[in-house]
Length: 90
Image (cartoon, rainbow, N blue to C red):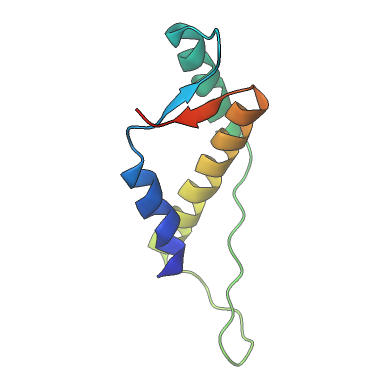
């Protein structure tokens, strides 16, 4: 259940917007598109899971999709922060 917590938190912060001093709305949109495109160009890695006996467990397709979405979101956030942006609630 803990793996869904970031998704819930992101949904709760859906009014948050990227902010950077001096950045126009068009510049923010362009940087966000650039970061999104860049994030999608990297392959996502499956999260390793093991059973109590130590055997590897294959994730359910919906878990793989959730992992992928979380990884993409983190890459976008990292990229935007590297460009000098911060998330501001709005």
